[in-house]
Image (cartoon, rainbow, N blue to C red):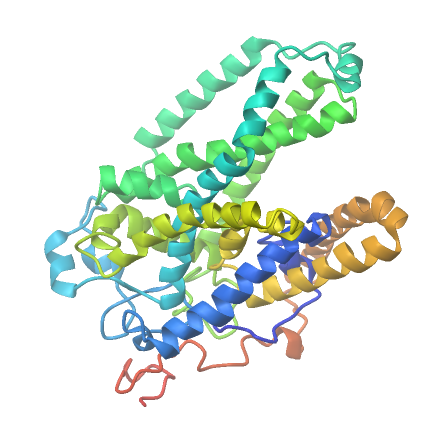
Length: 450
């Protein structure tokens, strides 16, 4: 939870597939790229930057943390730099000093920058010509058997999409003008752009991100489901109705549960104020909140620009863009080495994009289980793999959902819990402590002063 977790492992499927997709459906070359990227980042780059180079005074802060810190190692109090309009108080910020990140958090942002640039270069170099030719061919080629079979169903009327677009825009404008305190999801490139355009406005930043990222990701998922329905010969109108109804139900339930938890759990998501081993630490929401501060409230210029400590992290954009070019050059020099083409730098560099809030236990388990199923099962039981692999993955996902509901009604509602050494928490109370000499976090801290 708070360290590098070299030996951390679990068989809890919710932890295995919660941050990454199911390891059973990942091709082995993709799993190998993720392993190389994860190992190099967490067990080579981060320890070298922390203990070897003390990069950005790294030892003053914990090695693995998504929190924001002051230069003396104590937690940064965001409430001290926010005015009544929830905007940045520049005078208070100048008085408290610059925000500091853990080395792990800063480098993870750097890899995010590199991933964005490498994706564009990789697609352009390796697939640009193929994309162009396939697009040209798609305008002339005959429809395949799946398209012919789907013609017996009525297509979705265009006005359904137009109406949904108008409705969504209307509701979004109402939410942005009336319910100004809502803060939706985020992504690095959209938050970076909006942080440059409107620094000091976190609500505007996260609202922009919901259209720049969440709408895109939901649209891709929407199309993915339609593609599955296309091959399974499900009527398009039925797919649309199910998707629409499911979105309304899921959104309503998620928002209702969030409001209920915020009102019923004291100090929820504030891990420093919660009792030890509390389950309400909200690691994902913690990253969301800190990102809204970094990109929205304070702004990228004061973090990754000339007024911040991490301006050099922007060089990761250039590193990421140059990476696929180097791979392509080696491929042209050694065309017989087919394994070079298996090096997918966007996947390799972006392997740890979910860290934080994901930790080593999630990746260790995902990689081991993925390797077993992708290699051994595929090699020795190929027919079994083709028939039952995706069914097994779906069954494990459904099992997690079923057991969560069952445990809630049988244990949680009765205020009962299952306590054993595997659920006893971190086991490493000093994992969140800095290692620099002389750093004193106060009398309430468990961290020793070296």
